[in-house]
Image 1: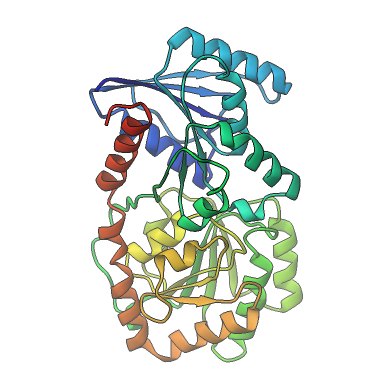
Image 2 (image 1 turned 120 degrees about the vertical axis):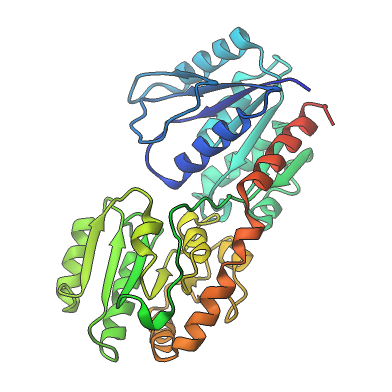
Amino acid sequence: MNKRILFVGQRVTYDGYSKMFNWTVNSLSEYNENRIFLHTFYYSNTEYTFSENVEWSEVIREKAERWKIIFDLRKKIKEIHPDVIVAFLYDAGLYSIFAAIQTHVPVVVCERSDPYAKLPLNAKIAQFFYRWADGAVFQLPQAQSFFKNIIKKKTSVIPNPIFVTGIQTILPFSQRKDEISYVGRIHVQQKRIDVLLIAFSFFCKTIDNVKLCLYGDGEDLSEMMRLTKNLGISDKVEFKGKVNNPAQYIATSKCFVMSSDFEGISNALLEAMSIGLPVITTDTSPGGARFLIENGVNGFIVNRGDASMLAEKLIYLFQNPLVADSIGNKARGVLKRFKPNLIKEKWNDYLNEVCGNE
């Protein structure tokens, strides 16, 4: 049945949220039954492009009063008369709920991060106002359970898809470069790059001639570069900056490592597993790592903030190449679980349900 879908977001940049926002919008535009509208609050600076079937109304500004954002969005709702509003992230969800009051247009909020890691006030605000949403999409069952007594209506768990191209050959561990790879923001509070660097300094005391390559940029880059000098590992750590299609750069690494305290479902972790890299990750809240990994079978999970444990698992992998190969091969099982077409169908079916088009 035909649907007019209005997607709402703050802006489109280069981060993981923007990647999934872009993919979801474009994927649902592939259905002939859907007419897709996109409304963003702020100026977008991004490499991502939207399908010609997507009607994007981008507000060119850097900041605005909340009432102005809600007013503009309400005006857009009345103009296009959507069948459903899909709001990505916390602010967009709140603004959409207010803007849609008395319009009789259902609002679906999408939590893409860890609700347990929100500031206490923001968590209380979300729990209070999300009860007026008509639906919600979560990446993880653990995130869904945070709101289970608050959002009484239809909810769904829809994970991220995997889309990796151009990787033809999976090398055995012994033939890979002596590199450990990380992909993501250079950020301390969430990504705990400090823990990763400390763990690598411990690792280097046992195993030499290995590089740590970090692909990404962020607000803590200068601080982390200073930390590598203080730890005496600056000659072994390479800050590569942001790259397009990072899977092509990390495909020949020995392994992939992630040290975050909290994540939804990490795109970088998914992609590393899909190309057969043995992975080591912290036990991220609210459960993304455990959603993907059976510890010791298709990857390793270590305690958050535990640099010593992270170093121990890195050393273990390098000293046991056959184990590393087995873990990498089994990690590729995520390809079947998170095929883009399957995830696209989940989204379309769920929005049909919210719109009453079951």
